[in-house]
Length: 130
Image (tube, rainbow, N blue to C red; front, side, top):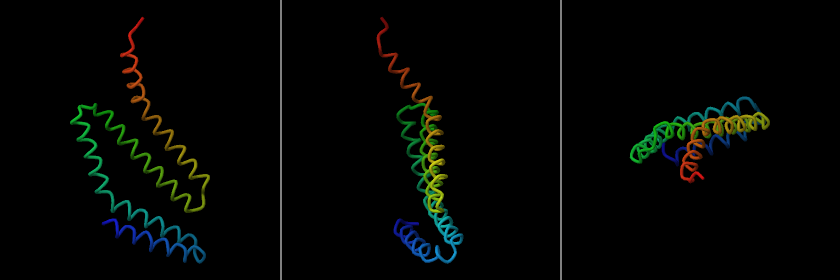
């Protein structure tokens, strides 16, 4: 699905949401949820291409596979947390959306600890010991 089709789908879903939210709020939210899933499925192939490109760049640069996998997991967590937070905000649950965003940040930080540790160890190895 090309970007124009995705934008048209999003605009139509938004218009229908505005019309339906006063009539049947649950159905209007379901419409937005289904639209989000359709858009996610439409871009899944492109996401796969991006992940493969990042992985091949890491291989060419002789970057440890663990670091590349971690970076890809961090990117995935960020997008999933954003999607979940956006959906819950659309449902009017801002406090839940905030907790989802916080959980995403915590998981990202948890995954980043080995990378941060490796960077700090590399910096320390360059400092001459007294």
